[in-house]
Image 1 (cartoon, helix red, strand yellow):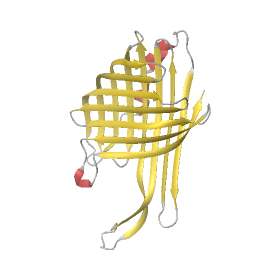
Image 2 (spheres, one colour):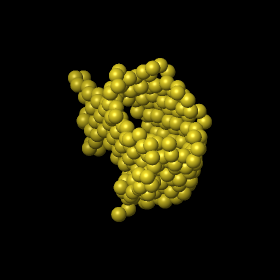
Image 3 (cartoon, rainbow, N blue to C red):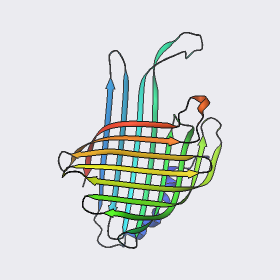
Image 4 (tube, rainbow, N blue to C red):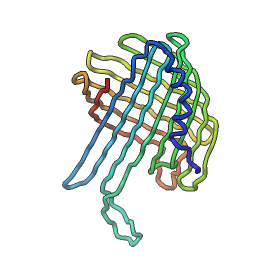
Length: 256
């Protein structure tokens, strides 16, 4: 099978999880689930659904995090679909993407840690059927107080991807960089910005997630976000853009 399954990426982190079972002072798993849905009817017709779930567990030495996200959208477009010179309006799929991620980190002091990270995505409207990466590296907490946190990570890794148009499988070494910023604006409002860069010989992938979350109570919050994704290697002749943006307003549920 040409594609690298997500299960293989997650399995690469099992040794970290097994060692963590013997670590004392385990605070247990925490998580969030997000859902956003937008529908239009009448003069125009469209549907947009995005969902995300994330879980993490942290103690004095170990931190484990797992996440999954999905985006699906349909809308009406005008075009000459049959090649007969007559424009038609059709209700078609315009976005269909999901991605999985997992990270395990070991702290050897309050500021510094080593990590292993895996990411897998499939996108029907990208130049790649799938992209999968596995990286190891070093992380540092630049700022860590009650209101503000800034964490950076850097390290080498491996990328495997399959081109949509040709079916060619790319395999290459990459460099990964991450900056994760969070700031508590008020007692119930948090600002966040996460920048991820995966750069290799064949492609450089950049994703930035900027947003704000407002807690309504201990369980529910409203979250507004702007995500920008960029690939340097795309098929411009097929009309594929290098940069995609996604604006969301989601309802968030906190699992405790």
